[in-house]
Image 1 (cartoon, rainbow over the protein chains, first blue to last red):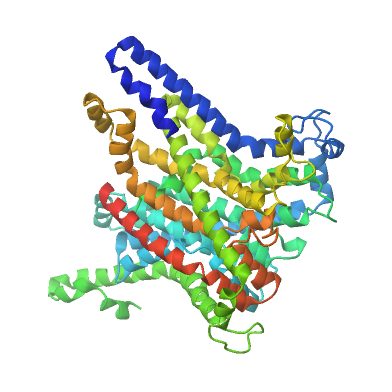
Image 2 (image 1 turned 120 degrees about the horizontal axis):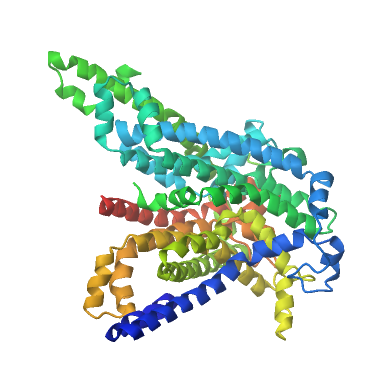
Length: 299
Length: 313
């Protein structure tokens, strides 16, 4: 709505070049004003988390000053506390192991299946591709109770290896789906040329399809990384001791000790835990966005 | 493996002639390889999605200690409880309100960014997508801290303007507002990105032609932008409806369903009954109530995606 009204002067002013220019400038200014308002809304929580993490405990507790600024000097005390006095580094290590394993497993399964479904086709492959898309729409909160029983019967309850087992259900369907789209967009002539040169299916996959579809593979890798890094329902349900816990649940539950909220340290923990996805996003934004929008535009 | 698969390939029957035998062998091998390549995927989906889904239905018909088959008793028990109806009501309010505002904010911000000079768009898009990139559990922790009753930084701002302090998470109605607010904050950037991508795909000539005919910006929006984006808007909304309806993180972290069970959604209530209270069958019955709305949304999404796939070619 706002956007429409903001651009209205733009077309009304077709009568004179000067007024057109002026109106366009006003539309632009209005756009910036509204965008700044939205940016404040979107960036307020991360800003406040950073501010809190850099304050001393005393300043956080006393509330003598404006809470939105650091009045008594920046301190890295909270980060030191986080790394020395809590289990945070264990959580970080566990999350890193689980995420790396999940990403590797996901990409192996997805690329093979997508190549097969997108290019080779076999009896029932069309139905299977549709089925994959539907499983992507099954939320984790529908499956966590039966999976609890399954994980328990496999003896993987309260072990992060159980996460390596169940996380692929969150990542494989979507990654396969977008990889099918990428593989299908590669011209048929390429594999015909490869066939004439006598390449086998595997050679074709590794020498032609993976290099050509590299942007898709990067997007899918980023997707599976961020999803496994941020997963919350499964670890919340299946993990309960600190030595097996992952970052999301560990930060939210274990860092809160004896009902005294150490907010500075909590925020420091949340920031460090959120850093890897944010860093990847900062450097690979275009791939990140490509992966995000591919689900609805490809296929 | 190859022998059983051979009969699956419809082209095999037509290639009986002698010169074709090499091709036949190749086709047989090709579809066999294709099938084998899909096996890991089918194992994961079959073993960890489809099997648990059906197991969940079976589980929901057992008694608490899982020793006796009790039919639909868990479901009728739930339907007779006031708390469960509150969960239904709150899930509906939560999902519908949150998705509406996410879609609205996404549409508005996408248009605003699209108005800017091209070289500045990237920067704004990158900035506004940040809420989506931070793992939800961790940003919810940040929101929780802003809502904290004694230290609330939001109440400090309200005090500054002379307003009364708000009990964000201890007043049930404000708690409902708060969980929706956090969900909108988290999900709006996703809509922004989808709509921005869709806006870019509308051919510029359509707007030029409309400008020549003297169409106003509003007319352009209603007669060009909306029809061109209708499909992607529908897909995004339905998709977000599923994700929001099944959301767990926000409510679990901020209120754990309280105060007075008024912020429970299906996922958190199912967690409470199934895992915390140890009644797995009842918990899976709760989560199965999500199935109808998810199934309906999924069918429409699939239709939309297929249509869009054809449009793009």
